[in-house]
Length: 231
Image 1 (cartoon, rainbow, N blue to C red):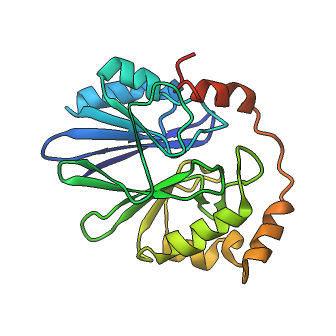
Image 2: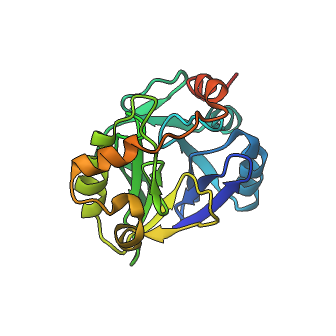
């Protein structure tokens, strides 16, 4: 499997390019509109054929490049149910396998940050990979106070879904604000302060107390992302 991570300095957002090495069929996850030219250049340089573009959820802090990538390459644009955006080619549900020849990506519905949040599990070689979106961050978790978020649902997503995956799974989030690029499930359940709770009620109370400011670009980003970034 081919794997590449990209970082957008303006939004502190990560995006991911994955491809089957033999067929060169590729997928981009959590694209950023301002990085569209970079993705297209990388696809050309690496002789990759973009077949799928998808987001882990409707982002509130940056605009997706999914619509532009679909327009430029003819790729399919996928979103997880519940899907709210215009221009989506197909949708997927919890447990669905998104297959590109030998590359299989398992969709895991992990509501909590938003009701449409998904993680993507790739059981590759000796070390599986989990793209965690904003559900599980490195030493943090996604906020739950907007876009139909729920600390109750996020607790279940974290402790009843993600924690059951192999503990050596490498995790790659959609954002990081402290210079971290990857972690493992074992690390996070040992060192992540948001996960050091004994009960669901304790987790919910912890999230209530965050009192975070409104995302600076939410009023621009969400409407644009509901159109897959085509303004």
